[in-house]
Image (tube, rainbow, N blue to C red; front, side):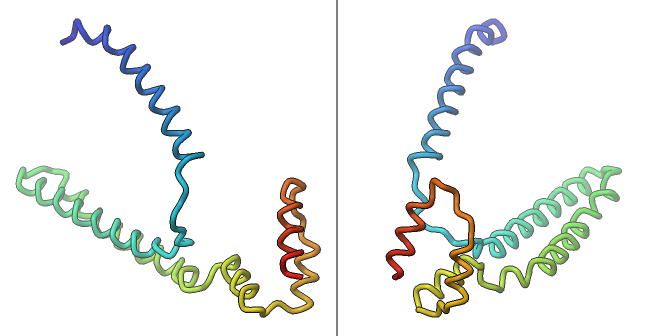
Length: 144
Protein backbone atom coordinates (compact mmCIF):
# COMPACT_ATOMS: atom_id res chain seq x y z
CA UNK A 1 0.00 0.00 0.00
CA UNK A 2 2.77 2.43 0.85
CA UNK A 3 4.38 1.93 -2.55
CA UNK A 4 1.19 2.72 -4.48
CA UNK A 5 0.27 5.84 -2.51
CA UNK A 6 2.69 8.24 -4.28
CA UNK A 7 1.26 7.10 -7.60
CA UNK A 8 -2.35 7.60 -6.57
CA UNK A 9 -2.01 10.96 -4.79
CA UNK A 10 -1.71 13.16 -7.93
CA UNK A 11 -4.84 11.62 -9.43
CA UNK A 12 -6.74 12.06 -6.17
CA UNK A 13 -5.58 15.67 -5.92
CA UNK A 14 -6.67 16.36 -9.51
CA UNK A 15 -10.06 14.76 -8.81
CA UNK A 16 -10.59 16.82 -5.66
CA UNK A 17 -9.61 20.08 -7.38
CA UNK A 18 -11.99 19.42 -10.29
CA UNK A 19 -14.78 18.45 -7.89
CA UNK A 20 -14.20 21.65 -5.90
CA UNK A 21 -14.50 23.83 -9.00
CA UNK A 22 -17.63 22.01 -10.21
CA UNK A 23 -19.36 22.09 -6.83
CA UNK A 24 -18.49 25.75 -6.34
CA UNK A 25 -20.05 26.60 -9.69
CA UNK A 26 -23.09 24.44 -8.95
CA UNK A 27 -23.71 26.04 -5.57
CA UNK A 28 -23.14 29.62 -6.71
CA UNK A 29 -24.81 29.69 -10.10
CA UNK A 30 -26.99 26.63 -10.66
CA UNK A 31 -28.96 25.78 -7.56
CA UNK A 32 -31.78 28.16 -6.71
CA UNK A 33 -33.08 28.34 -3.17
CA UNK A 34 -36.65 27.10 -3.23
CA UNK A 35 -37.42 28.37 0.26
CA UNK A 36 -36.09 31.18 2.41
CA UNK A 37 -37.08 31.00 6.06
CA UNK A 38 -35.46 34.34 6.99
CA UNK A 39 -33.91 32.75 10.07
CA UNK A 40 -37.15 31.32 11.47
CA UNK A 41 -35.62 27.85 11.73
CA UNK A 42 -32.59 29.01 13.70
CA UNK A 43 -34.07 28.56 17.22
CA UNK A 44 -35.36 25.10 16.31
CA UNK A 45 -32.07 23.99 14.76
CA UNK A 46 -30.00 25.56 17.55
CA UNK A 47 -31.92 23.70 20.26
CA UNK A 48 -31.51 20.41 18.37
CA UNK A 49 -27.78 20.96 17.92
CA UNK A 50 -27.31 21.76 21.61
CA UNK A 51 -29.37 18.69 22.57
CA UNK A 52 -27.22 16.45 20.37
CA UNK A 53 -24.08 18.06 21.76
CA UNK A 54 -25.17 17.36 25.34
CA UNK A 55 -26.08 13.75 24.46
CA UNK A 56 -22.63 13.31 22.90
CA UNK A 57 -20.95 14.82 25.93
CA UNK A 58 -22.94 12.55 28.24
CA UNK A 59 -21.88 9.51 26.20
CA UNK A 60 -18.26 10.69 26.38
CA UNK A 61 -18.49 11.01 30.16
CA UNK A 62 -20.03 7.52 30.37
CA UNK A 63 -17.22 6.00 28.31
CA UNK A 64 -14.59 7.76 30.41
CA UNK A 65 -16.26 6.56 33.62
CA UNK A 66 -16.28 2.98 32.34
CA UNK A 67 -12.60 3.26 31.44
CA UNK A 68 -11.87 4.77 34.87
CA UNK A 69 -10.12 7.71 33.26
CA UNK A 70 -8.71 10.66 35.19
CA UNK A 71 -10.29 13.08 32.69
CA UNK A 72 -13.82 12.46 33.97
CA UNK A 73 -13.50 15.34 36.40
CA UNK A 74 -12.82 17.80 33.57
CA UNK A 75 -15.45 16.43 31.20
CA UNK A 76 -18.26 16.67 33.76
CA UNK A 77 -18.03 20.43 33.27
CA UNK A 78 -18.84 20.18 29.53
CA UNK A 79 -22.64 19.69 29.76
CA UNK A 80 -22.87 22.39 32.43
CA UNK A 81 -21.00 24.90 30.28
CA UNK A 82 -23.09 23.88 27.26
CA UNK A 83 -26.33 24.46 29.22
CA UNK A 84 -25.07 27.87 30.33
CA UNK A 85 -24.15 28.76 26.74
CA UNK A 86 -27.57 27.62 25.48
CA UNK A 87 -29.53 29.63 28.03
CA UNK A 88 -27.34 32.72 27.60
CA UNK A 89 -27.72 32.57 23.82
CA UNK A 90 -31.47 32.02 23.85
CA UNK A 91 -31.92 34.79 26.41
CA UNK A 92 -29.81 37.18 24.34
CA UNK A 93 -31.52 36.50 20.99
CA UNK A 94 -35.06 35.61 22.13
CA UNK A 95 -36.51 39.01 21.28
CA UNK A 96 -34.77 39.00 17.90
CA UNK A 97 -36.40 35.71 16.95
CA UNK A 98 -39.85 36.85 18.08
CA UNK A 99 -39.93 40.04 16.01
CA UNK A 100 -40.44 40.36 12.29
CA UNK A 101 -37.40 41.30 10.18
CA UNK A 102 -37.47 44.84 8.79
CA UNK A 103 -37.36 43.83 5.13
CA UNK A 104 -40.31 41.44 5.57
CA UNK A 105 -42.25 44.13 7.45
CA UNK A 106 -41.61 46.64 4.66
CA UNK A 107 -42.71 44.09 2.06
CA UNK A 108 -45.92 43.42 3.99
CA UNK A 109 -46.59 47.16 4.25
CA UNK A 110 -46.17 47.53 0.50
CA UNK A 111 -48.38 44.56 -0.21
CA UNK A 112 -51.19 45.69 2.09
CA UNK A 113 -51.02 49.34 1.06
CA UNK A 114 -49.91 50.82 4.39
CA UNK A 115 -47.32 53.10 2.79
CA UNK A 116 -47.77 56.77 3.62
CA UNK A 117 -46.16 59.95 2.25
CA UNK A 118 -43.37 60.02 4.80
CA UNK A 119 -42.31 56.46 3.94
CA UNK A 120 -42.29 57.29 0.24
CA UNK A 121 -40.10 60.38 0.82
CA UNK A 122 -37.75 58.32 2.99
CA UNK A 123 -37.37 55.65 0.32
CA UNK A 124 -36.60 58.24 -2.34
CA UNK A 125 -33.60 59.45 -0.33
CA UNK A 126 -32.04 56.00 -0.01
CA UNK A 127 -28.86 55.37 -1.99
CA UNK A 128 -29.00 52.53 -4.48
CA UNK A 129 -25.96 51.31 -6.41
CA UNK A 130 -26.04 52.43 -10.06
CA UNK A 131 -26.36 48.88 -11.30
CA UNK A 132 -29.63 48.51 -9.38
CA UNK A 133 -31.13 51.84 -10.49
CA UNK A 134 -33.11 50.26 -13.33
CA UNK A 135 -34.66 47.70 -10.99
CA UNK A 136 -35.48 50.41 -8.42
CA UNK A 137 -37.07 52.61 -11.08
CA UNK A 138 -39.15 49.65 -12.29
CA UNK A 139 -40.42 49.03 -8.76
CA UNK A 140 -41.22 52.73 -8.23
CA UNK A 141 -43.01 52.92 -11.58
CA UNK A 142 -45.00 49.76 -10.79
CA UNK A 143 -46.12 51.25 -7.45
CA UNK A 144 -47.29 54.48 -9.10
